[in-house]
Image (cartoon, rainbow over all chains, first blue to last red; front, side, top):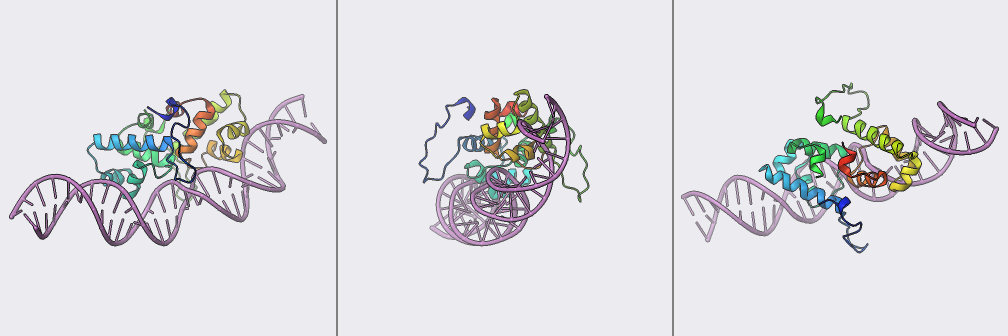
Amino acid sequence: MWPAQLNRGSIAHPEKMKSKTDILVHFGLRVRELRTQNGMSQEQLAFKAGVHRTYIGMIERAEKNVTLISIEKLANALGVSITTLFE
Amino acid sequence: MWPAQLNRGSIAHPEKMKSKTDILVHFGLRVRELRTQNGMSQEQLAFKAGVHRTYIGMIERAEKNVTLISIEKLANALGVSITTLFE
DNA sequence: GATTATGCTAACTATAGTATGTGGCCTGCT
DNA sequence: AGCAGGCCACATACTATAGTTAGCATAATC
């Protein structure tokens, strides 16, 4: 269930609060889902993906707007294609 | 034809040259393909996606490592899902 | 020539990603 | 009870760069 399949602006946040964008939330949840399915800790995934260990947590908590190169690294570490990562 | 479907490291670049990562190259080409299919100029796509016009050119030339939020903006502006953008 | 579209340069602000360290929770063992 | 290990969240601070801006150059078409 991806943002593109939801109404736009389905999550309302006052401007004064730190916004958690839909796409980041869903991406983070998907990463966590696949990671735990693979029986990996955040640290193991971080090592395998070649990113910092704290960064995985930030991604899963939708705290960072991850870049395409990092998306690919995560997909590869999780053993899936990028499209699978967004399904 | 995506990097995940190719051998890793298929593009060899000397370290002294600025590296054009596979995923960025393919993403840029895909964006340009869909943009031109839609009959849009870079400026029109930029306006529709809510990014700067020069940035579209940089993306298409694989000069920038685009973030997830910008990927979503581009997908929406091109009228496709993110998975379609990576097919 | 003019117009449209794109490429390029330089500089800027905001933030992605890194790094280190601490603290809390849970589980299992003695 | 205490202890150790595993796991994760969080705070702080840093470097590299994403994305923006303004202006000029180039290319293609009429």
